[in-house]
Image 1 (cartoon, rainbow, N blue to C red):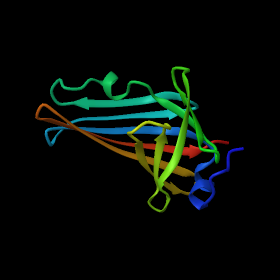
Image 2: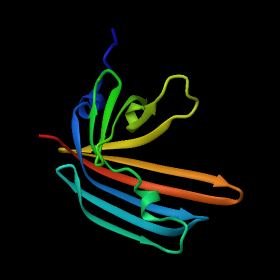
Image 3: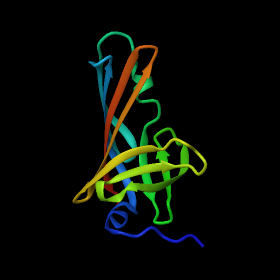
Image 4: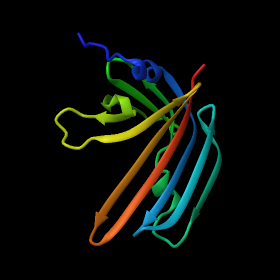
Length: 151
């Protein structure tokens, strides 16, 4: 039997969430180069904005697969539904519950994919800041997803 994860943050997290927007900012070697936003209603993209300076990124690289719904359970599982019909089942755990840092957790995997969550009323925001350096090129992608409690 799996022991449920407990706590106030877990109680706020564990429910069904519908995505209402995906926002992304991209940087290359410290310079702002791209901004994108997708708004969703009823699991479908209803509005898109994307602007890029130069040709380092295109919209498909930034928005390769758009999530439309997440279901978090207190047993450490979450199910993610995508606009294109794909579904993923993942594990989650608190890396730092007090700071709202949540990780997509895979047993026996060295790296954790973490993000910060914040709750306000019936909304949750997921913040992620991914930085990479390869052959003297530094890239950074900052994303904010806004979700609302599903009816």
